[in-house]
Amino acid sequence: MIHEENHLALKEHNEERAKPCLDALNIPSLKAVRRAIHALAPISVECARKGEAAGRKKVRPATRRKQARLSNSCDWHGAAPLKTR
Image (cartoon, rainbow, N blue to C red; front, side, top):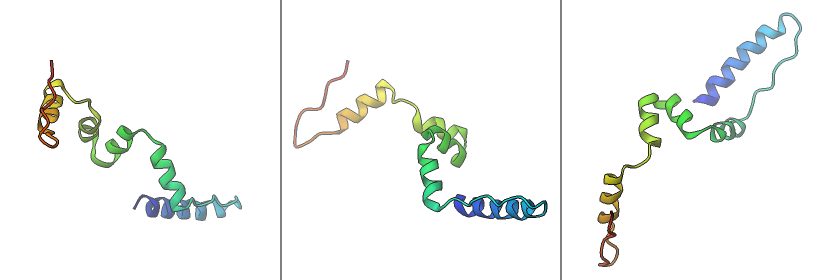
């Protein structure tokens, strides 16, 4: 979807550049667009996709209470749960 929007926008821009005899800009491949997105910070990508609140929620650190709940719920092969402070 991002690649298609980028492709259409550059195509329109190149048509405008052709009027004053300017060179056309290269249209990046899908792989180049994906690499550029993966190079960004995860919070930036999530904020752009789903909004600032969702981005902050996804990358916030776990609280002590949540960490304790997660460690106590992981009971592997009958082993005792981890103790927290």
